[in-house]
Image (cartoon, rainbow, N blue to C red):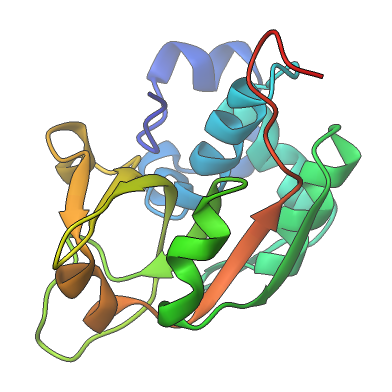
Length: 174
């Protein structure tokens, strides 16, 4: 699991200091940490979060509010995992998860208080049930101890925006 909080040694080793404050950038690195996890899941070479951050700055993927979905999709494609940013209604999430993981925009810690978006996490599967359980990879500190959430909890904070990836083929299949 990758964390969005960039390790100081990684930051220094990869020249992050040239970008400014490590903590400030870490607070906006959820999409890049998620992208790194996707690259690893697809068996691709995965630059560090600091290196991805430098690429994102170079390609104007980041805004003051965070990463542009289309920019992350473009970086993923450039790094060998075809991706597109597009709307995915909540009712279509389970069908999409049959074939590939998604990076989706939710509110950190998935509150049900009416806030939506602002934080990117990976959805990578689900378990059937009256309220399906969604398997997540969340690069935030909260996500280090939470790896699944009921769809009913995800839905209120989900914006309907996602980054979709090419089908993930399990090892040994072609």
